[in-house]
View 1 (cartoon, rainbow, N blue to C red):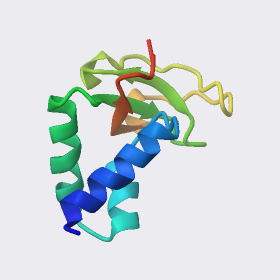
View 2: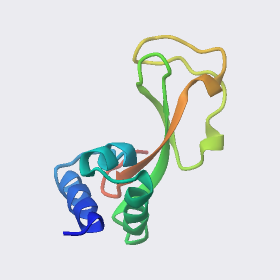
View 3: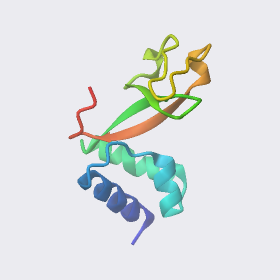
Length: 108
């Protein structure tokens, strides 16, 4: 089985098990391949309307997902984290991660 097939099979399994977020780095670590290989397959699945590519804003203190957007420039201001109740001095202190959500998952 090729790496692409392994990636697709793993992602399809996660989608069918109602995993709400697919992170390319985690898939790459599990399959032991490059992030680029994973993102190629994930982007194909976006084109096939299986996944949706979004960006998550993660708290730099606890990793909690603070916000989700299709456009990372929409992350503005310094929101308080609902996970650890801290507020950073700048939004750039928090991590923005490219993430893939199954289209059946309603994240709005």
